[in-house]
Amino acid sequence: MSDVRVRFCPSPTGNPHVGLIRTALFNWAFARHTGGTFVFRIEDTDSSRDSEESYEALLEALRWLGLDWDEGPEVGGDYGPYRQSERREDYSAMVRRLVESGHAYECYCTTEELEERREQAKAEGRPPGYDGHCRDLDDTARRAFIDQGRSFVVRFRMPDTDYTWEDLIRGEITFAAGQVPDFVLQRANGEPLYTLVNPVDDAAMRITHVLRGEDLLSSTPRQIALYEAMIEIGAFAGPVPRFGHLPYVMGEGNKKLSKRDPSSSLQYFRDEGFLPEGLLNYLALLGWSLGGDVEFFSKEQMAQAFTLERINPNPARFDPKKALAINGDWIRHLGNAELADRLVPYLVRDGVLEDPPTPAQVELVAAVVPLISERMETLGQASGMVGFLFTDDVSIDADDAAKIMGDQSAEVLAAALTALTAVEQWDTESIEGALRTSLIEELGLKPKVAFGPVRLAITGRRVSPPLFESMELLGRERSLARIAALEGA
Ligand code: GLU
Ligand code: ZN
Image 1 (cartoon, helix red, strand yellow):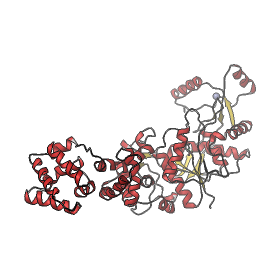
Image 2 (cartoon, rainbow, N blue to C red):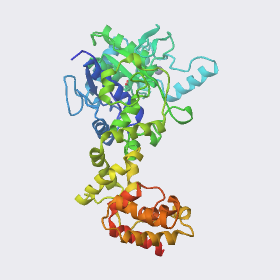
Image 3 (cartoon, rainbow, N blue to C red):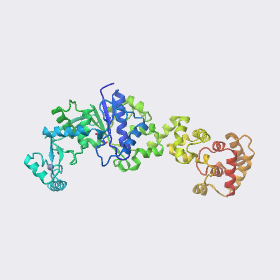
Image 4 (cartoon, rainbow, N blue to C red):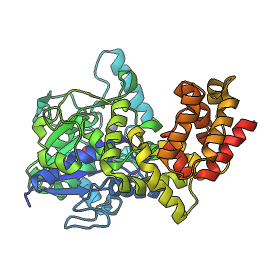
C-alpha cells in the first residue's frame, strides 16, 4: 500500500447525482492506481437535511457501481467512526481549542444586523462578506450580549495573508489577502459546519489528496488556513493535503448540471437501465481520457491508467447521446447470457415477466436477447421491444396501424395465414420461406407491404425485433392466432 489516502465524503441529502458519482469514481481510480486507500466518509452533520434513507442510498449506490471502499461505513478502519454524526465530541473540542488560542471567536451579530451591514457594504462598493465586527470583543461586551439574550456562532479568524496552492488539476491558485471573510465554524445551536468538520476529519484521517468538484474551490483557502491553525496549536501534525478541483459538468444549454434536476440523479440512470459499467465509463470521460481515441474502457482499465495530469480543467459537457451510445456498447460487450440476467429485473419491473419469472419466461428472455442486443442502448428499452412475446393480449399500436394497414392488408394477412398453416417445421427459415413464396413471389408485393401487416399482427408495432425469428419464438399457434385476429379486425 502507498500512503496515498483519498476520500469520498458526501452529505446524505436527497438522491446521489451523477456529479457526485464522478467525484467518487475519480477518487476511487486514484486510490486504486496508486495502491492507496479510498476512504468513504458520511458528512451527516446537518440534522435538518440529512436522512437515513439517503445514507442507505449512498452505500447502495457505491455498491451497485462497484466502487469498493477500504475504510468507511460497514467496513470500518483505523480512523473511524466514518459518520460525522458520531464524531461530535471531536468537533466541539477543536472549536474550544481554536477559540482559546485566538484562531476563532464568538460572533453575536444577529441575522438582521448582518443583513443590514451587508446591504450597506454593497451600497458603498465594499465586499459584502462578514466585516469582522466581533473579532475583538472583550468580556464586558460579550457579557452584555449574553444579557441581551443573544446567542453566538463561532467564526474563524482569517489571517491577513494571501493563500496560494498548487492545484493538482488547475495549477497555481491564489486568493489574495482580505478576499476571504471570517467564516462560521459552529452554529448558534452548537452544530458544527462543513467548513470545520471536513478539514478536521481530513486531518484526523490523514487524507493526502482532496479531489473534489470545482464548486468547492472557494472553500480551499479557508480550509488551508484552518489546517495551519490546527498545526500551530498542535492539533494536527501536517502536512496539509494537496487539492485538486475537478471540472464543472455542464448540462443542457451550457448551464451547470443541476443537482436538483431529476434526470441528473443516479436513480434516473438506473431506472433507464444504464449498466454500472456504462455509466462509470461515461462519467470517466467527464474530464478525463484514457489516451488516444479510446472511449470504451472499464473502471479497472481506468484505474490502471489514471493520472491526475490527464484531467482536463475545462468544463466537461454532459452529452446524453454519448452516454447512451457508450451504454449500448457495454450492453453488447456483456454477452448474451449476462445481458439476459441483467434484463430480467427490468422486465419484471415493467410487468413483462411475472415476479418471480417462470423458468419458461427466463428461457424465452435468453432466446430473444440475441435478437435485440444490437438495437439496445439501455436495459429499460427491452420491455417495449419484447413485451409481445410474453403476453397473449398484444395491443396493436394505433399510430403504427394507421401507417401500415392499407387496401391490400387483409389480403396479405389471409395469404400469410394460409402459407404459414402449411409450414411443417416451425422455425425461422421455414417461416421466412413460406412468407416470401406466398407474399413476394406469388402476390408480387414489395417486402414492406408484405411483411408490415404481419409484423404489426405479431408484435403490435411497426418496428420490432427481426420478424421471422420472433415468430419462431412466439410459436405457431400464437402467431397464427394473432394474424387471424388482425385479419378479422
Ligand atoms: N460533503 C461535501 C460535499 O459533498 C464534501 C466536499 C469535499 O469534498 O470537501 O459537498
Ligand atoms: Zn459578529
